[in-house]
Amino acid sequence: MRICRFDDNRLGVVTGDGIHDVTQTLKELPTWTYPLPMFDPFIAELPKLSAAMERQARQSAPKPIDGVRLLSPVASPGKIIAAPVNYKKHLEEVLAQKELHHGNLINEIHKAGLFLKATSSLIGAGETIELIHLDRRNDHEIELAVIIGKPTRDVSAANALSHVAGYCIGLDITIRGPEERSFRKSPDSYTVLGPWLVTADELKDPSHLAFTITVNGEIRQDANSDDLVLGVPELIELASSFYTLHPGDVILTGTPQGVGPVRPGDVLLAKMDKIGEMRVNVGTRK
Image (cartoon, rainbow, N blue to C red):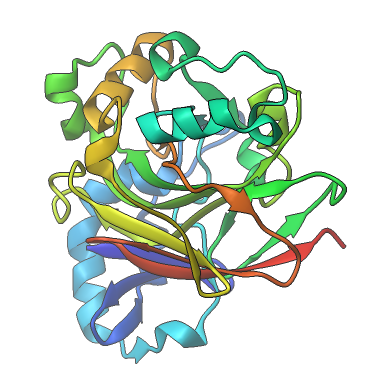
């Protein structure tokens, strides 16, 4: 199933005909009193809601995809976890270009570990990346994004994929400079997820996904998840050995070579096998 959020927090199922509004399903979610849960309530209940969503989708007239504003398919992730330099050629690229490393010590992922991005940086494909610090280079980075589906702690790589709710395309926008990664990658709108979530039962193997990103029609990054240093199972194993992962937590798996600058007015087109494509506009903070 392909699941999206759109317009005024509507919930949709995406088919070849368009987007079917299944927002009524959200009435079946449990309610909580303060303090609120540390996970995304919809992702946590997704296995129970899937049948009802499919029924409602059959009863709902489709809306054209290009006629709605796509939001992040995950509304309330507790954590956004990111994997630095997880493609060998990107590591070589960063080490070779001073404007990328700025004198920082760049380690391969086994030594660097993972880092966190602010959840307030999250937007969807129908929203605008609002660049800041335009005196510095702001770069695009396309990544496979993994959405955790159930509480996960100390899981082995062999069992890790059974903890995944689904996948989407991720954009990790980055301000270049000497500061820590999480600081430079966490401004508002610097994490884009979309265009929708493809559930894990529909995308069983995330290790053979070709993907590209173009900027104003120019191909910048063209790679395959085959080339990940740590694949999705290994990343989940590593992350869950440090954190308890909760439903809706996002793991950005790393970007390949070809990162480059984006500027206000640019249009990004990101495509990924078995997921789809999303067009994202670049502007400036208002």
